[in-house]
Image (cartoon, rainbow, N blue to C red; front, top):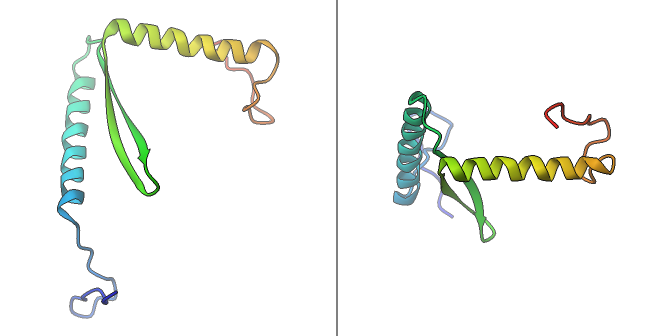
Length: 105
């Protein structure tokens, strides 16, 4: 592998980004702006969740899930139900040793 070019007397190698990396960064910036715009629009209940998903061995992609108010309500109820059930028989199998039962249950 050829050595990275150096600028002047800097010891740090120059980082070159591929078009894909630049595109991913631009998409991330766009997504962050959209998320900030949604958060600033108080009163809306629609939610967009951005989840990082491993694709193959060394690639991670972002997946956006758009949830309506009804979807969000159902998801919240399902999550609370899962946690409540996990704590009904004592400590959940994946709980830390000193983890207390959440107050919101």
